[in-house]
Picture 1: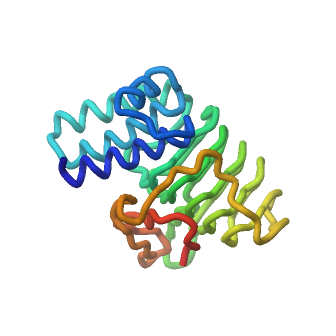
Picture 2: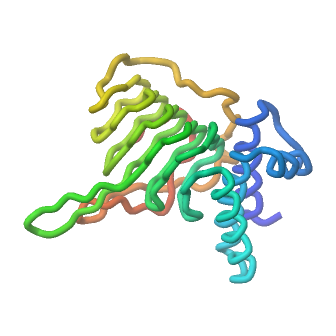
Length: 228
């Protein structure tokens, strides 16, 4: 099995683990994709990114499947979104994720969450920024995260929060604008996928390009490490 295929199945099995709480066979993963509305677009997201390294024909089929799965789930999550293994979507309706956002491992996204860009208009022109979500992060219904903020690993973002500033790791934030309510909290990760360092995929470096926009060759997939 090629490295790309191993990475693909590692992420897919971790995603399925978040839903079922156990490691599934390939057949069970496929059955879950058929019957689970919110798991299906996560699987097609992985398929798109695996297919991008192969033929244009396969890439086209994967993108068509992802558009169909996303529409049925009521979400807007482009096929190029970079997300670590163990991504779970709860309910899904109204979820919007910007194509340049970066999401860590074992992240939970509820319905109505918006992870979007923010433009800063300055004398030097427009500067666009995108969020970076750490590992083991729980984001509640209708929460809005905008701009070049970093959500620290293990953080909990309460329902209806509007986040425009960095969130410390292992903290609870809520409100509009979001404020820190608690610190040193345990992550809220149901069915946390066991992701080893060896099997978690490539390590990705995150940097900010000039002008404020996030540029990345990927993301750090290892759990419980605060974003730097």
